[in-house]
Image (cartoon, rainbow, N blue to C red; front, side):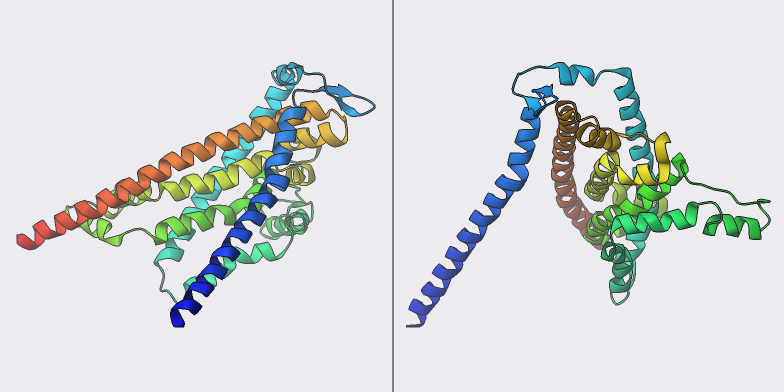
Length: 308
């Protein structure tokens, strides 16, 4: 009787999982795979003033991406995204390291500080930055009060404002994968390195950083690609001076009505995403092999030390 009930429960659970997987697969096909496939297809079509696109195959849209204007936009976008990624890494790694090494009862509070920005729309948070960066804003008033400047100073509509906006928006996406990677780090490897005479800095550079490289790569992906395509932060904080890739794609679809060119630019970003995912997958596999080898080496070193 008990066995029959158990088999019935297992059969119902298996049926539930099959239905859930089927629904999830259908959702991904309809709202992820199909739109991207259509986007790649439209990139080979011809622009039409009446119907947006005409199903006449051409490579002109990709050839137009080699125009100096677009290459300048792509370079500026990559430069800003790279700098924002580096800033997020320099700020996020120490915070994630501290969060992973504090007492367990304090981690929920630090994790709460990282997650709380998600409670508010990033668009609203960008408007809040305008109040801080504008003339007679918080920073300007503070500099005037300290006597550093003689009058109001505006940081708006500059690369500095774009850096601040991108860093503030994307920082949690860097901290979370770093924390997950550092928290899983085997502390015995650091102890073994110190037993062999390595300083704390050398142990960090040669042990901690290589073993947490998957988290670094994951955080860089989660920051770089959205920063490359984000259009509202440069538009609100950088103004007309910041024409980045996201703004370019948005303008092609909504202003110029050149859907094929916008689709071609978007497909370039999709290909970049696929390449970065492949790099991350390779680095992750190498990191797993290093951790497994490191555990064996650490155990052997400790065994040898115990024999001595």
